[in-house]
Amino acid sequence: MTSRSRWEGPTVRAAIGEVERNDSHNGGGGARRNNSNGRGGPGGGKMELRAVRAAVRVYAVGVAVVVTQLLRRVLGGFRQPALLPQPDRVAIVTGGTDGIGLSTARQLAALRMRVVIAGINVEKAPEVVRKIREETGNNDVHFLFLDLASLASVRKFARDFAALGLPLHVLVNNGVMLEPRGETVDGFERHLGVNFLGHFLLTHLLLPLLRASGEPGQATRIVTVASATHYVGELELDDLQGRSSYSAHAAYAQSKLALVLFSRRLQRLLTSLGDPVTSNAADPGVVNTALYRHTCLGMRAARKALGWLLLKSPEEGAWTSVFAAVAPELEGVGGRYLRDGGIEAEPLGVTGNLGLQRRLWAEGCRLTGITWGDPEL
Image (cartoon, rainbow, N blue to C red):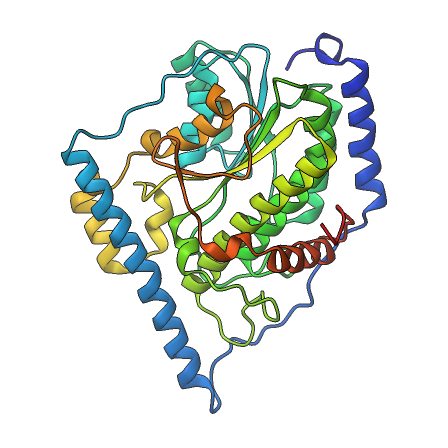
C-alpha cells in the first residue's frame, strides 16, 4: 500500500491517535458461555414450534422478495446506477472475498476508489485482489485480515488500518446468513456476534477516521448491509443469544433487525454531534451467493435450478450498497433504508422506536465493552 506520508494530514493523524486511544481504553466485552442446546424438558415442544415458525416467516419473506424481483425482471430488469469516479477516496468492505462483498469491492474499485477488503479468508484473498486489480485496472486494492467473530481481531484490524495513515471515506458492513448454531471467540451466538456486535465495535473504532476524513459537502459514509428478513425479526433483548430457544432463522432475522436499529440510531448520534458522516442501510434483495448453502434443501434446489432467473446476481445485489456508498443524491443524507439499486423503502416501523434503539445500543456497548454516545439521545 502507499506510504503514510502521501495520505496523512493533521486531522487524520489526530483521528488515528483517537482510534488507538479508543482501543486501549475500551477493554473487551464478552459473553458467558452456555452449552445448553435449548432442547428437552417440558418446553422442548414449544421451542421446536418457535423454530418452525421462524423458518416459515423467513422463507415467506424470501419468497415475497423473489416474486417481486421476478416481476421487475420481466418488466425490464434491474439497472445499474450511473455513478461518477471516486479517485482519492478510500473504502473498507467487510466480507469482501465472497458474494455481495466481493462484488461491492470490485465495483468500488472500478470507480477508482482505494479499496481495503477486510475478511478472514487469507487463502483466497491474494487471488481475489489480483482479479479485481486485473478486471478494473485499479492497483489500489488490498486485503487486511479481520475476523468479526473475535472482538480482539476487530480491535487489531482498527489498529492495523489506522497504522497505514489513510483517510477513510466509506465503510461497508457485510455479514453472515443462516449458519448452524455456533459461538464466536467471545462466546456470542454467531449471527449476533458477527453481523451486529462485530460491526458495532468496528464502526465505533473507525468512526474517528471517518469523522476526520469528512467535510461539509462531502460527508463520509457508513453502509450497513440489511435484509428484508428484518421485517419478520423479533428482538429478544433478554435473550439475544437465543439460549432459551435457538433457531438459526430467528437468530439471522434478529441480527438483521438489530442492524437496521443500529443504522438508524447511529444516524441520530451523528446528526446530534454535527459529524460529517452518514449512516444508511442497504438491502441487496435475494441474491444468488454461497450464503444459501445453509438454507433448506428445497431452497438450495430452487437456487440451483432457477437461481439465474429468480435471484439477483451478486453484481446486481451489490448495486444498492455501492449506490449508498457514493451516489451524489445521498450527499449528507442518512437514516435511510435502500433497496434495488438505491430506491428508498420503509423499514419495519419498530426500527424507529427510540426506546428500543437505546436499549439495543446499551446492550451492544455492554457486550463489546465500550462507551459510545449519549444514552438519553
